[in-house]
Image (cartoon, rainbow, N blue to C red; front, side):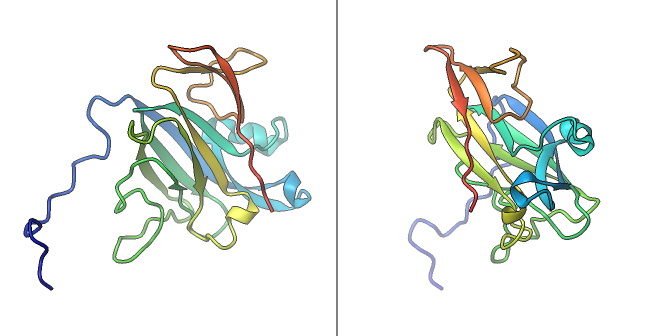
Length: 202
């Protein structure tokens, strides 16, 4: 094929998707098998912070979709461990910037495998780009996209204003590196507000 004018040389990929000055937020996430209320307490799958895993499996904490709150300009590292009984899993995030060779979560075209086999761990890196701004990024599995999202393997990254902090609306606990579908958001330049993340499951 003829190369397009001005595109004779293919530019090299950036060393990283995140600028060096971007604040980094890291989350250790596990994909696990667990009975879910939406499935009539039969076994489903969910993304969960590893810090919450024992409480959910013991029944002392209700299973809830993974919802992370970050700020515009943050670099987000999700270290995903596949702790399910069988089958590969991945994380695909709508909206943030990512390297499609490493963090798209979808094995498309000639790209290398993007999934995590049982017993393995992989890091997915996303950048909450200022050009996108405040948004919500849906997380879902593409290891088995036809079945796993319907079994509960989904979540969200909610992107707030640069410099925002997040607290639990009841306890006041810092929610910056925790998962929660309801938080109080405290932006630096406007009034605080309560944020709810709702998922519609058919």
